[in-house]
Image 1 (cartoon, rainbow, N blue to C red):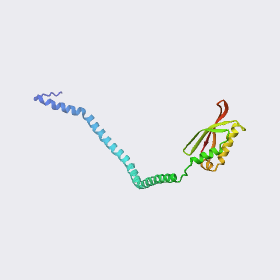
Image 2 (image 1 turned 90 degrees about the vertical axis):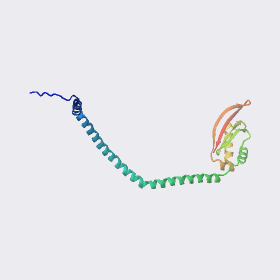
Image 3 (image 1 turned 90 degrees about the horizontal axis):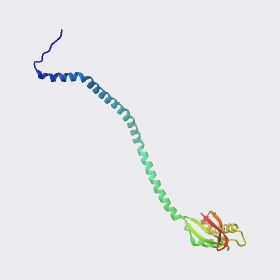
Image 4 (image 1 turned 135 degrees about the horizontal axis):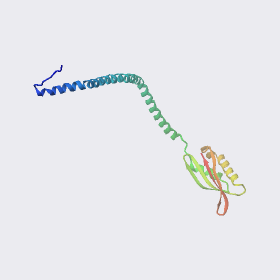
Length: 185
C-alpha cells in the first residue's frame, strides 16, 4: 500500500527543502569538519615537533651567547691593536733620503751609461737608461753598474733586491745602444 500525503499548508514545503538539503549535504559537511579537525591536530603536533628543537637550540644559544660576545669583544680589541701597531710602525719606519740614493746612483754610474728615467714609489725604485759600447760590452757595463750599486752602503741598506727587468738593443742618434730597466726593492 501506498501512502498518500496531502499538504494542507502549502508554505511548509520550504522546511522540507531544508531538511532535504541537510540530509543530502550532511555527509560532506561532516567530512569537511572532520578534515579541518584532523588538520588542526596535525598542525598542533607539527608545531610541537618544530618548537621543541627550537627551544633546545635557543637554550644552547643562551648558554654560548656570552662566549660569543667575549669573542666579538676580543676581535674588536685585536682590530684596535692592529691599528695602533700600524701607527707605531709608521713612526718606526726609516725615512728614505732621496738625495743619498741619487748620490749613490751617480757614484756607481759608469761613463758609457746614462739614465733616462728614475721612478720611486712605495719603497720601490725603477731606473731606465741607455748603455753605449765603450771598452766593455753592453751587458758587462750593466752588470758592473749593478755590482757598484750593491757596494754602496746606503743604497744596499734601503734596497735589498736589485734586478735587471728588461734590455733591448736600439739606436740612439745613429749609434747602437742598449736600453735597460732596473728594479730595486
